[in-house]
Length: 357
Image (cartoon, rainbow, N blue to C red; front, side):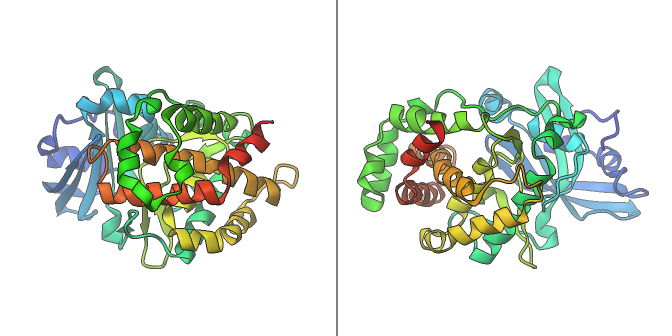
């Protein structure tokens, strides 16, 4: 995928036309870049930029999207996400059978604890990036569910463990630190918009008794390749209604329920989720291409989906507790409210009890 002589520039302004020409060469033979301009920067946990390109000869994309490590957050990313998981996934050449940005270059420099990815700018293809303030329609959520089913089917069980290019993929396990989130901040922000039983959860109850317990079930059941972080803020919608998935940094192996629940419970309004989730779970199961003996039953899909709310609720209660440091408060609040409603509606603690007994 990437020319071996490419090294990682220290900043966006150091990406030269010659460097970009080499990065794009495997995908756009004959394209010679003569100018690279930064048109947008978004430096958070990782550094991101949209780069505008022009060409002296040949043709290629007018814009690309670049992503790299922010050294100030490298320890946090390594702890919670895995520093090199996304570039390793796309450098592996694995074919992901769902909509996602095409990656042109994925470079890792472990000595510097750094990586750089250059990928398709999906906005140029009409992609509409979403967040919780702009939820998906039910039809769009169904498209996303079918995409996740294709991904999970392709890498189910031995289809993943027997793939030598993905032998580095780690199991999804609970990471430390969530239990120290100042939950009183999230409680104050949520106020009376969520059920009292959610506000009554203390850090140990939410992050250990519920979240970590659920995460433990991901590795005691059939595993597949997980996107790992398919909340609505990592999705986009194409003009034809197909839903794509961004930001594969949390890629892991584990039970399919994490992706399915985390996506559906946060992508739809509470009302749409309540009204359609059973049908959408049937949509997921119908889109799985698995032998009969490995196909999860309808009852198992429902049970594990109910338990999966543990992940979304814990992650977004912790994020909401961080104020505006990690995410916009309006985005956090909407997601925390959706997962909180699902936690009560779906009786998540009881579902966990049923799985773990």
